Amino acid sequence: MVRYEKPIIKKVSEMKSGDVFVTEYGIEGNWCEFIFKRCESCGKGMTVTHFHRIDGDDTEKCYEYRDIVETTFTVVGRESG
Image (cartoon, rainbow, N blue to C red):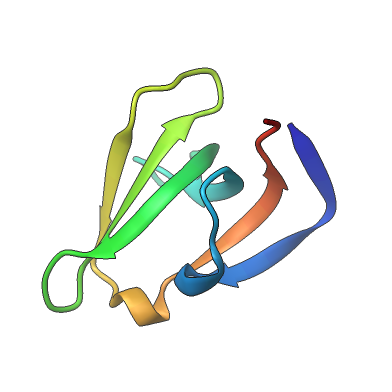
């Protein structure tokens, strides 16, 4: 994995499969890093992000009550080929 010196804030339209992003997941204060696969709208004001864990390949989903055009990610690196 390639780590960036400083995190980059990206909109959904700027995200690429393989970007490593950090997010609060599950419970408050539980900060995790995941590998981005894709993101899509799943109804008015809702977004679903498809990702996999750094140590795995199985795709997981995270639903968020936020419109896709307002969704941003804090990108901290890039998955190595």
